[in-house]
Length: 108
Image (cartoon, rainbow, N blue to C red):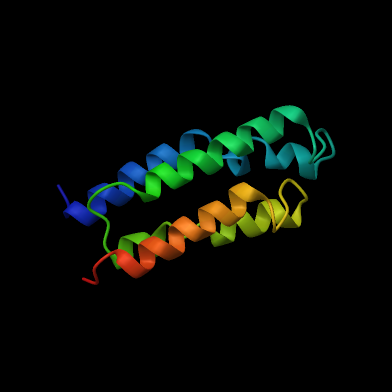
């Protein structure tokens, strides 16, 4: 069945993946079929940022599980392609939540 940490990580990944703009929409931006400033893409991205924060707050995560959920690589892609900016409130908020959890979540 897996450890409590692994189950928590899988629940978080499942939750995050449902609204992940990288999976469904980023290719459209790269192909030029959608602009980074498209209203629909912005709405999906805003929703995803909130979902990511909630997923990080799931009970049962350890430091190693939390590291697997690090939003930095995904945020970097969204910033690089112009969907988000480094100072976007959702970006800074998600980073702050992640950093706070890293300081608070017990080590294995």
